[in-house]
Length: 95
Image 1 (tube, rainbow, N blue to C red):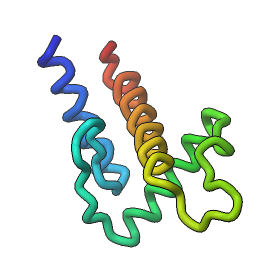
Image 2 (tube, rainbow, N blue to C red):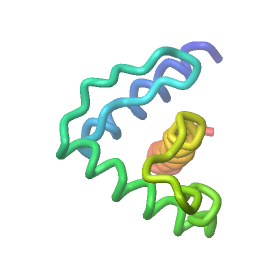
Image 3 (cartoon, rainbow, N blue to C red):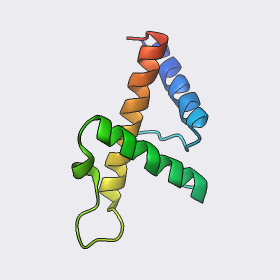
């Protein structure tokens, strides 16, 4: 079972790279060397995923604030990560 999780995580990282965004590892310190283009792609993807799950209002910035909080950013990354993981599991039929 442990090997299967490693395979899935490897495929998830490859999918991140194919999408052109920085991989996200839940529970670990993330690498934050993303450039402007990569950040823009991530924003586009999380909006698409949030709209798909009908939760765009929950992940949006509150009124009066210019930038999302760290917790909102983490939630956005988790949302995209779960979407990519589900996509990989469906594509490669790994359940």
